[in-house]
Image (tube, rainbow, N blue to C red; front, side, top):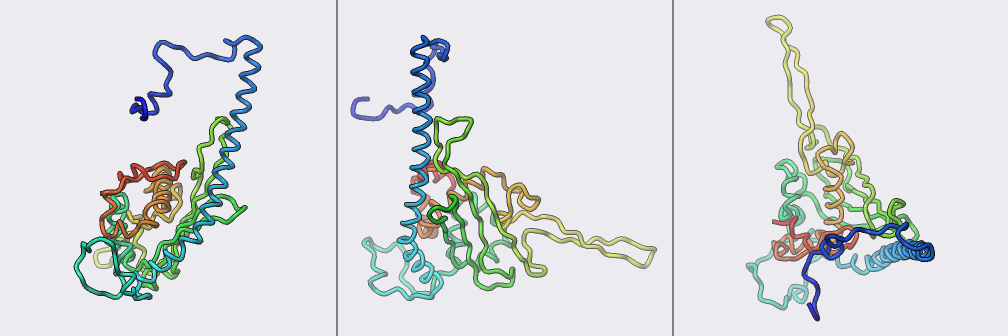
Length: 300
């Protein structure tokens, strides 16, 4: 296609041609074999430079996070009725699609945005909604310069009757170095593990478990009751490590995808989910690319 891209999938373009066998090092003359080894060394060096590029990109993201944060802080103040928008701040360049009116803040902003996302909507149970109504803000914290690559998602709650702490966290640890088993390619920043947090639930308020009472007879007139606690499906199991007994409902792949989705799409573009405009966006997935195409598959 002159002037354009080949429309075939990438896998078709890079797959071996039919009827053509691959060559091995032994198929080359000795002089060429040495050259091939030299080229392989260069390719491995390229992968190392590429890995450094991704590390530098992480540092650049950290730099620009400082520019984004005042915007996110102002967003939080408006949502939680701390800042009253001025007339100028309320002007928009297109005709408003929403009814005129005024309320203090935006109640249940994050719960509404979360429920637009299909995978989160499946995770959020009725009892979870009562807790998430107290969610004030969600922030992304990127590790600092010269620190190991990682990012932390902070879920900030108002004081509530469900748990004692105000901030729940999920941290994703990353690397960008080429794998020893494949030294010629750097996959870019990829999540290698995640760390949740312990939730200190108030008595009788743990939505991740369900409690049932069992009665056993002792003789004809007396009964002894015992209480049995069983795990219950809940959004808040997201904060438990996937391999832990409490986090067994979520597999590692889903956990990592959610981490990228929160960081790259949902948190920075939350208002588009709240207004349900995000369903028309064409987001990308791809942990190594940090891009947004096809991420729309996670939305309704």
